[in-house]
Length: 491
Image 1 (spheres, rainbow, N blue to C red):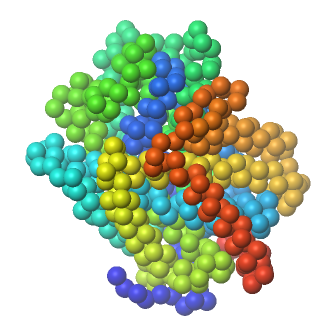
Image 2 (image 1 turned 135 degrees about the vertical axis):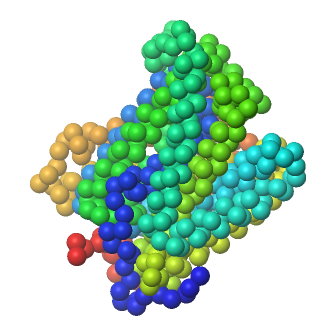
């Protein structure tokens, strides 16, 4: 990889390189729809049972509130900084810095979780096809996935996002095919009753919603690509909203298909079906021989696409923070030919691969195994951080439209919707903490088991360090903090 960089005074990303399709799939693939369908949403069935599809619909509604808020800010604030720029302009430099600090822990570790998952499912596929098995077979596969993502993100935003479009279409297509076959095979068991509260009312569906919400994390990932997007003020807004709605409908159809095929009355046992891999089990029943292989292939696609989308987002934010000197200016270097933030890309590549390998080996003795424990461990941190960041963005809408854009303030769009977004996110935030009872919904959450119980403490320590860092930066370079809300020019 060449080390050539552009003139430090002309450090700009490639303007107008991508359009709505690429940006839309940046958000879609960041949600990892195949992985979320197979792994994340299934947890909702433990609470919602046969009303799991209703839980997905409720989560979709909650996600759309926050997506709408992000879209309202994206209309005026196109920046590679994404959400931290929004929060800085709506709530001030302190909140903006904390948002950036939280993002620095969250987004750069997303690829590591997906590299580990790719290694896990890749090893499973090799074992299924060849019979060869080894406890460390996942490791070289995780590294290979990491190197592919590293090259894609380094090579340019056009190629990485267009590969994301292709991969996203593959995973979505496979799950839609399997779900359609499930619906057909369900025959007269198809029913709209799975969307209607049962004898226990709405409570089971609301309890399941807490876990479905986590499957929507990533719809905001289009925002950091604003400086490379054509007509970003319009395109980013559309991509964020469309991704939340379209993937929400995708989740709803998948969960409906699984529920009517498996049986609403049996959905409490869904997660344990086929040794904890219910989707492969059902796929094999409706597509003998190849069904389970297709599901695994879709998940591998999802891991690769999600890792690439996460790396695209994180490297743009690292670049943006380097550009305003809140991180070393080294991160702001741009490749002369590819117009990518090359040093941020190299940092992300080393961090992602290194973290996946180190955590995977450290957790090798855990009951879930090294790579899956790594995926879940990082997932807990992401759930906490993104739920908190989404709350901040909703509040920033209120601040921005009561301040800079007061003449456009709408009580419905800029007060009611953000407040509803915040309220609906609180259960998701508490749900990731564990060891407490979620009020109103009356959900008793078991304490997090080892090694996951240390994650909330690590996140808290990280944020405390961020608070200290803010005051250090304010004393050393207050002007840099004032630039945390900078956006791209129209030129």
